[in-house]
Amino acid sequence: MRIVWLVFVGLIVAMALVLPRLSRTPAPHTTATPAPAEGSSGTAPLTSSFAALREAPAPGLAATADSVVAFGLAQRGTPYVYAGVSPLTGFDCSGFIMYTFARFGVAVPHSTALLIDVGRPVPRAEAQPGDIVVFTGTANPSTTPGHAGIVISRRGETPLRFVHASSSRREPFVKVSQVENSDYERRFMQVRRVLGQQNLAAARPAPTTKPAAKAPPVAALPARKVAVDALPAPAPALPQTLARKPVAHSAAPQRTAKKVAAKKPAVRKTVAKKAAPKKQVAPAAKRKTPVKASARK
Image (cartoon, rainbow, N blue to C red):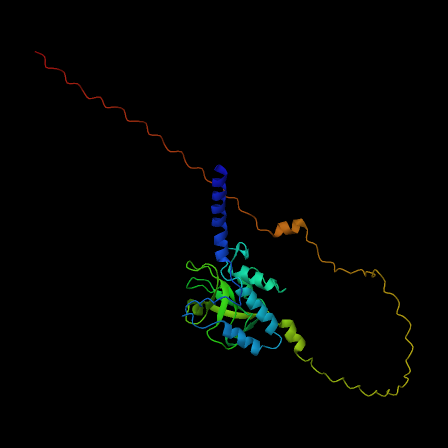
């Protein structure tokens, strides 16, 4: 009886683990119903865009762009995970783009700030499937790249739709959204094209250049011989030291010390007069007051 209960509990646990994964597994693109674009009513089907793309493909881009878009749409429903780069664990916006393009050998960086510089910029009206559309962050005054997706609309089609790994709280998974009539209109920055660069360069005809005409040979000018005079004898070397000539000094009368001293005016010696000593006045003798004799009785 215990074994039966253990088997029953094991089946319940296995079903609890497997069923959520089966519900999140995206269906093949041929039978899946396209998700409604964010901000729209969801009535415009995606199959019409791809049918038109196959009917009138862009030269050199049809097969590669169609494969990239189909592979990106097959990842719909994969949860959003910060820095995620695998459908097993989840994607962030740049990780989803890197994983999708790496499937076809196209290397793109795992950074939204660097996606704004990959490939070459194209006008928004000329965006086509396989292009990368870059948006700013969710903050209102933000002007730096903060989100990106892969264009799935054909050239000239409006609204411009793209598949991306959304980080919104209501739908945090890979889904399809549109630019027009949504907040992505305000956040739109640029469209970058990374597919078909080599194909377009090879299809472009090489410029035809005419070979440069050879210049006619120039006749040699007649040369005339000119007689050159022989160089004169070299000048003698200058002496290293020059001879000094004695300089005659005029005999100036020398004044003797006595004559100089005689011309000097005599200095009068002033003798300071000694001050006469002051006479010392003897202190006046104290006057003796006569004592009156007392009256005799």
